[in-house]
Image 1 (cartoon, rainbow, N blue to C red):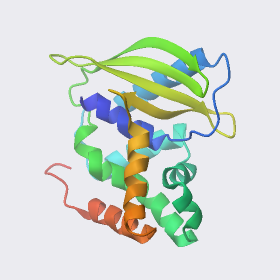
Image 2: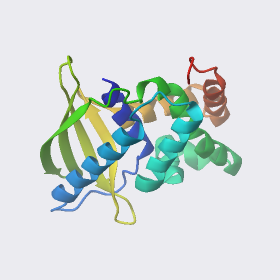
Image 3: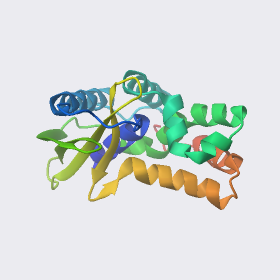
Image 4: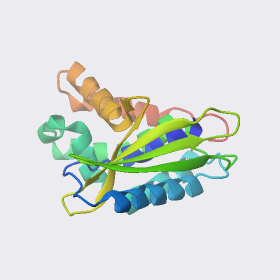
Length: 206
């Protein structure tokens, strides 16, 4: 389950769903997921790490696979369009520290024993789905599907991951926009909540 949550964090960081992948993208999509999983597994092997180190590791993954400013726009949807420039800048700067503060204790691959079995890919109308199974010793395997789309620049990107019928990126987007909607559209309420989470004293060793 540790690696499942790691993949959830990774996918959130890589959100770029805007255009469907083209026909014939299956092999390239599968290669993208394999490389992303390998990079994330290697980056967090041997933890736990401090929050600062974890932030650096996540930032490196985002720099390689995503675009944090554009991802921020997609997460907030219509609330991004209504936000002031300072609010946008704040959200972009808070996003990675927030996720590290929220999931830090779940993303370290301490034992290095997690295995990812890839089960092939399937081309869909709105992208490519890469199927995998997350395996850990003494635990039942967890099936996970990665949804691959293309960015406006034509880059293949991971746009969501589905586990047990739940889209991880979709859930995070819903949670964030729900907070803003509950505050009458006031984005500052979400920003303050993110800052408070980041400022919380981490567990020992974090």
